[in-house]
Image (cartoon, rainbow, N blue to C red; front, side, top):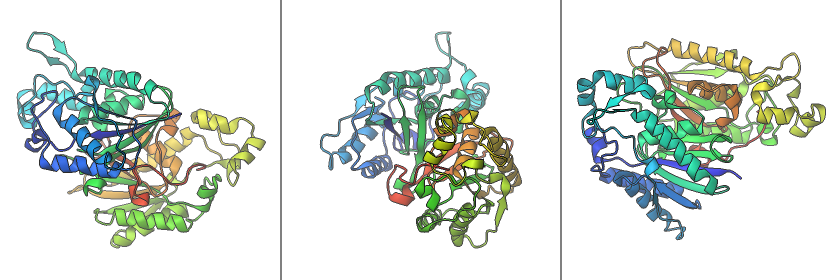
Length: 451
C-alpha cells in the first residue's frame, strides 16, 4: 500500500520580505500574507483525510502547519495536530543567518558561489575552527526523515510542512538524487507537492505533482529575479478514447476525444493570463490539437511541429490492450512496468527508452537553444506525450530510463522548466504535473494506463 505525502513550504515570512537568510534562526515569523497563504492551503486540502501532520519546529513552518490544520478541522474535526520534527528544520547556515543575500554574496563570494553551483561541496568554516558542510548535513537529515517516518504510514496520507531547502532535499532524496540537483528544484511559499511512496525510501516513488501555487492566485510559480533564459511550459496532450480504454497508441495518430478537447480548453483557461511567445508540438494530432486550443488565447503565436517529440513507438503493441499484450508476449508487460529500461518494443517500429531519451532530449535542446540569448526571457509552450514528457523531466533532474515511472504526467497537465542562463545553464524544474485546472483537486484524476 502506498504512502501519499503532501509536502508544503511555509508561508511568506518577515525574513522572506526583507530578503534575509533564515536558516535555523527562529526569529522570523509569518507575515499577514503568509497566514493567508496557509489558510488557502487549508481550503485547498479540505476533505482530504490526513493521518499525521509533521512540521519543522521553527515558528514560520509550525505556524503554517497549525493554520492549515485549523482550516482542515472545520470539515474533519479529528485531523491531527502538528508534530514537530527536528530532522525537517531548515538548512543550518550559522555563518550567514540574519544577513541579506546581497551581503553574503559580497562578504563570502567563494563560499556563496560554491553554495549556488556546487552545493554538495560547500564548506562553511565555523567559529570554533571546525568545518561544516551545510548541504550535506541537510540531505542526511532528509534521508533520516524518510527512513524514520515512511514505515509508519503505509496506506495513509500525511502532511509535511517544511522550508525551501529542506523540501528540496526531501524531494531530491525521494527521487534517489542528492545535492547535485538541489538548485534545480523549485519551492514557492505555501506551494503544494505530492509524492507517492511504494514503501520505505528506495522501494519506489512517484512524483505526482510539484510546486502548485494556483490556490494562492498565482497560476505558475514566478521565476527568480535573476533568470534570463527561456521558460518552458511542458504540456501533455488531452485524453483520447484509447487513453480512456487503456489501449496502447504509441505513434498511431489517435485524436482527442470530447473529454480531451475539454481538458485542452481547461489548460487554455489556466494559461490564459500567462505570456506565451512561441509554441512547438509533437507532429501527432493529439498534442497539436491540445496546443491549438491553448493558443486560441495567444493568436499571435505560430505553432511549429517536430517528429522528435512523437510518442514512444510501441511497435507491435500499438492498438492492443494489456491482456492482449500479456497473451502474445508473456511476461513482457510486467518487465515494462518494473524494468522499463530493459524493454525493446517488438516490431520494426518499436523503440526502447534509450532511443526515446536520445531523440526527445535532442529535440528539446534544439528548442531551448533556439529561444536562449534573447533580449528578454521568452516563454515557450511545448506540447507532447506521456513517455516523452517523462523522459524530459527525468533528464532535467539527471535521471535515466530506469526512473521512467517516477514522474506522473496526466492528460492536460502542465509542467514548468526554467533555464536561468539559457541553454548553457542547468535547468530548474519549477513545477511538475499541475492538474488542478482539470478537476479542482491537487491529485491527478486523469485517465491512467497505456501510453
